Structures are given as C-alpha cells and as structure tokens.
Length: 280
Image 1: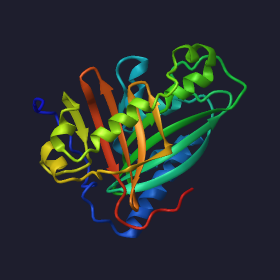
Image 2: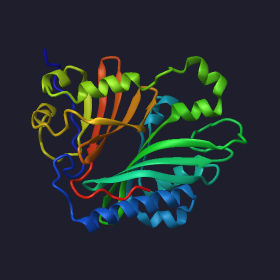
Image 3: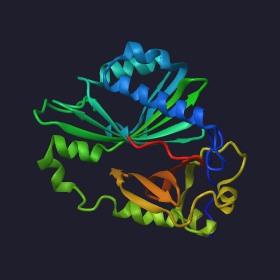
Image 4: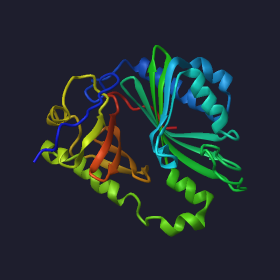
C-alpha cells in the first residue's frame, strides 16, 4: 500500500531532465566552484568573500550528529563568520572528481590537514599525524556567484582517525552495506516499490523545478534502473549514505538518510549530458 503523501522539495534548475548546457557555461561553473573551495581550504576568506552571493546559504546536513540540528548559515557574513571560527589551520584540498548538474557543481573532495582539520566544533587535542577528511560538496551558482554551498562530510572516518580506540568499539565492519542495499532498492524500476521504502514525511530533492509529485517523477524514469556504484566515491556518516554511481556515459550521486520509518531524506544529482570534465 502506498504511504501517505510525501513532502517533496523540488529546488534549483532542471537537472535530471537537462539535455545539456553550453560547454563554456558548465566549464565556468566547475572552475568557479573549484576556485571557491581552494580559497576556503587555504583560509583566504577575504579573496573568497566576493565569490559569495549576499544571500548565500551554507548547510552541512551530516553535522546533525553533533547536536541534533545541522549547521545552517544564511547570508555572506554569517557564512564567513562560521568559516573563520570553524577552521584551526589551512588544509590541502584535493578535488578527486567534479561534474556539472544544471546550475550546480558536484565535487568529490579530500582535505588533508595537520595537526587537525578544524571542521569539528570540538575535534579534541591536536594530533601530530595527518588526517584526511572526505566531503561531497554541492555548489549552486547563479549569475557567477555561489548561491548555495552544501557539504556532506565523512565524519565517521574522521572520528575514527582522531580517536581510533573509542571508535573501533562501535564501528560497523561494513558501514556501507545498508546503504548499498537501499541504493539498489531506490533505483528499482517500480515506482510503487520505491515509494514503499520512504518514510511518510520523506523530503526528496531531484533538482527539478517541475511541479510534480515524486510518484510522477519516478514514473517518468528520471533515474537509471541499473546504475553501477563507484566504490571509491562512497561513504557512510552515521545514518547518511553518500554514493557515487555511473550509468553508461553519465555520472551521478545519491545522498540519503535512513530513519526509523525508512528513507526520510533523498537527493539525486545527474551529470549534464555533455563531454565529461577532466578528472583532477
């Protein structure tokens, strides 16, 4: 039986149904998003500030594990204030892969830092060894400015690196097993079966402006039914799962959170239909 009506969030320009954007625009957006993250990793906030829209938004949904509410900052000054206090030292940014999806750029990144990353509110005492933090970042660009910045952070691996003994006691030997199983179910061919796995209040973001229900979107088959997971582009962060995938010549990413009643947050982004950007 179909669950009650879902709360659907459909934001940003059409992405899953995009037939491609002019190459220079896509390349410019990827370059801008990459430069923005590079300046952030170097703590060059004065140079970064002009790239942020005045009403920009920064969110880290995976940070809810540290206080129940995810970090959310509205406005350029609020975001810059957060960046100033959240980081303790510059870190080395590595952009492992990136692709454009409408007006958004999706970036798989790794941050290397010594003695500590500074991305946690209280990461504990300094550590001599280098720590590596994996982050999936979405940057939405409008009129040449960053309008939205969303981070999904691999806090599980970071916490294990900062305190291996404590984390090893409760760490799942295969934290992605549940996520892989759910991923396969969410990308099934039957919309009714997919809907049955979602919580009644699931919020889905397919990046489409269309005033459609999730059932209608699924019926239109916007998601490939047989995507292949990319093992090197995947992590779990408590109840959040971040999984990169490939379907034919296109790439995509699925981000979802599994709650007590099923999947209650679900985001999909698919690469624009054009030649892939170069890997970094």
